[in-house]
Length: 443
Image 1 (cartoon, helix red, strand yellow):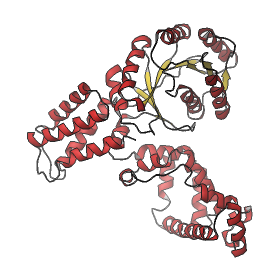
Image 2 (cartoon, one colour):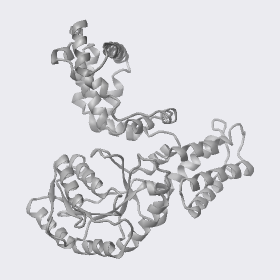
Image 3 (cartoon, one colour):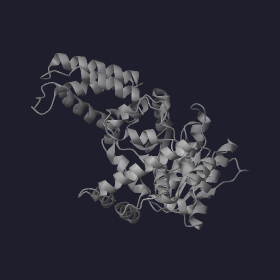
Image 4 (cartoon, one colour):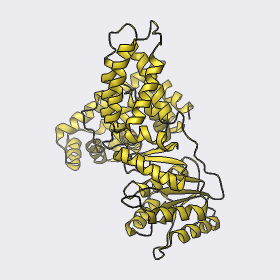
């Protein structure tokens, strides 16, 4: 995410390395490099210039205290300005009403339908709501089929009228359906086009007038950069939407949309979406995104993702087993499954300060654990619960069942044993089990 921008900004800050104080000359050079980095990231020139002018004004005259270098001070100033540019704080998401109505709008291919499924899952699992998703894209049959599959996947109801081509009527009927079935949130997936046109705009505006939505979310493909910002402006002029959703942030995005959209339309980014998994939807925090852009990681989001997958009872049970050196292959498999639910592995690693830069050239596939899982799945329940049972003949059978060489099975079992010993040692230390308990108290 934003790898090129991060590298360019880091290079800009390096020009201050070795300087004992900040002065107008070294500020000017650094600011020029920052501006170029932003423009290369597809940020509008006017926005980039205004941003760097603010950075320059704040930096000039700043005193560098003994414990902070000029480079560190400049990073802090840029971080604060990036946070401000993207909205300062996380925006509220309004889900009041009987039912609350959420209208989803955007161009075709922006990820509206996938986001609709993700939002339904988020409201169901994180907010305790009972959502109804509505298939109001009457032009693309595949959109109805896709939303049906997603609704089944996340366990929510869907309202659709495949033979009705009146999207406004479908939306109205869906509201009545929600009331009759005690659904407290209605999420309406609307039609898109490859480009902004009057037919699409009129239809979504008519739906808005008919159902009076609590929230209107504009979904934008972040990989389209400045084009995304221009499209957002056109939609906002017609719909006056309440917030933006950035999708495909796990792709090769330059960051222009995330950095420019709030400034351009004066509407907050409310969610960011990565990948196809229904769990991969996050509330947008400007300060955390600024940290990630500057290569500082995002520990707060990483902890939140972990907390969402592990409950206190599970953590205590696991800690007890580790302390008694009873951690087995079944426990390990369950932990892998929980980690996979947290999202893209490389994205998770990038949230750890300092790790993202080290991992930039390493390709971590989402199926990185596939071989390990195959080995464990080839074990009997007794073998998973008691690794000491696994003798050479059992290893041969496990290797054959997993489609692996015996050497791979031996290597995995050796690594597992070393990990067990390390975990047991850490948990015997005074601070050992405190990390897990501390995380759970934060829930």
